[in-house]
Length: 605
Ligand code: G6P
Image (tube, rainbow, N blue to C red; front, side, top):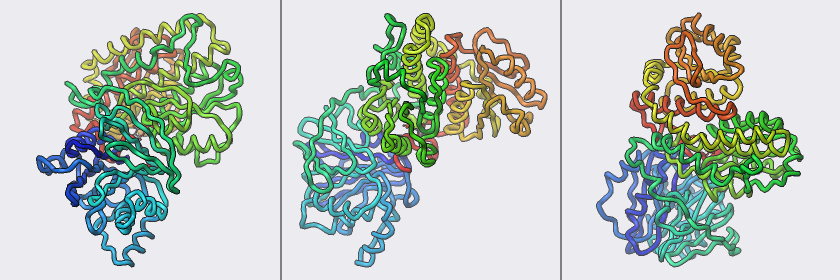
């Protein structure tokens, strides 16, 4: 949700800022801008639209080696050139980029207008620029701290001053900020992804901290001025992963990366000696695992749906009652937090505000939380302190594909480990380990058969509404499949438990409403056959995703995934649904990697 990147060093800032913006565009893409300080002036370029629109208006060179840049997901003020960041003070010396919401902006704005300040934008951020600009006699860090003392709300921000160009001031309260350390140059960003290939190591700011970042080092302090120590973490990862390569979209690349992502999630975690999984980061001794009476999984969007699959796996394999709930719903209903419940927070980015707030609510009430997270060192990873990293690599497309799959794989491992300290037999454990090891090749075989999905995709693309059905865990896959389709194709796709069809949605079935049923070869196959018959009786076209060896009658088109251990079937059944969403969105000419109104990392409430 809004990306910020800033540079101070000896190199020209412009290309580094533009590269950083491109990498952060997943966070918001309704406008973009940058400001570079040089010779006592601030050159500001900003533009409504995507980063490439900004690039098309930039001069070939902008002199200066200190700058801030921003890509926006609008909250206050419609997307426009004027509302794009950076915002400046009246003198145009201070440049501010901000991710978050200043809650008392209206009140501060009225006060400043009363003092004669003329505002140029409708944004909450401009308030900050004017407040900072009122203190030209203090150091920039003092001016920023004084301004922030007046502000209520959430922010991650970076500030530069044309008159004091030696440093970037960064501050954090609710919006992620990392400081990147290079060779005689330093960076600030809202995600370390922007710094890969440039910074050697990173330090993460915590809420309430302010940093003065100079080319030769940085100092971090609290808003009250007490210096704090920051540990540096090596910045690992391959900047090549941020490139689309030969793929037309990041989403399609990330679908193709799933075999490798799964291998990495499994790496070093399969314990063949004791037929179990070994997740060291959860820091739970066998006795503590035995004491768990309930598991509660929290997340948003696809992370929530992955959690629904995870809850099913834990309940089936470990026989511990488990349930997933949307993180925001959980936090707002004054939940009962139990000592013997294990809370698990799921987040690809590790920055989703609602998930973070739910974790804080659990911790405040004395509960313990594990994270299942992709982004190393992210806010949620640090808040949980223990858990499972997916190691799926950076995911750039707004919709999650490989991290959904890796999250479900991580839950298989957790369920196996919890199950093996309870009643799951060594033989069952051994079968699951063998099944998990086969997954990468099986996923590859599905991706290689993408062309076979064309008839299903064509039927969906030609319809305004589609229904996705499944039973028990396949219902979760139907929900994720429908979400994927609506996110990127903008078609109305609705998921229901197949058992619920006759309790309402059947009224909607017509020859124009395709029904996609997720029907693996399990105990419920006969029930799914009845569901297909119910839909066909109402002339609804039926499409199916099933498993090899299943023969479904009266289905217009179907796709079968390889047979596997029954518990792992959801992982394979989901892959064709990803490819279908991709194909439908391609056929409709949608902006697949950056769908309208969405952002990858929702760091506001
Ligand atoms: C946003 C994205 C979704 C994502 C959700 C949770 O809504 O558009 O694709 O599933 O956030 O993100 P997280 O980073 O917490 O997994």
